[in-house]
Image (cartoon, rainbow, N blue to C red; front, top):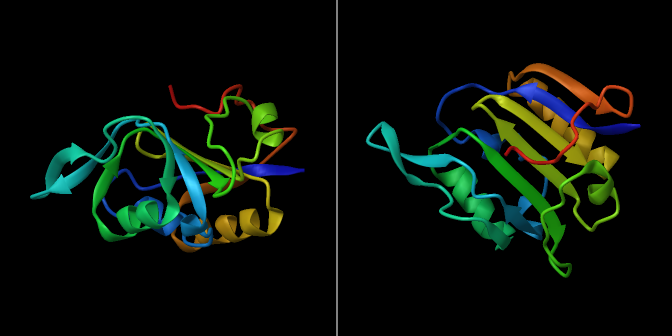
Length: 155
């Protein structure tokens, strides 16, 4: 069974997460944002933090606007999508993810290593093909056999 995908994104500033999430209906969810380390780009340098703290329930329309309209640099990121009518929590393991209402997990580590877990296999396949179209490197499916991650977190 396909759990998710993993790949390398460019280690540069841009609208990378907005591009990465294009096939996913970001705006139709509420999001957990881990408040890790990401910055707006201002005058071609790192500016204010993209997220100042951990957020439980960021509206997907706000997140979509932020990720698709502004330039930023991602060092570490932890995003989790929940249906709007459900409680937003920070799931920590794959088992918690499976047993929760969380529909998608997006993790970025060290500026370039991206991992996406998803429950919807059609959306997961669309994200996989989108990653290839965007020129991301080493795009691979994560399966039960090759998933060595013990926590769905970047810290």
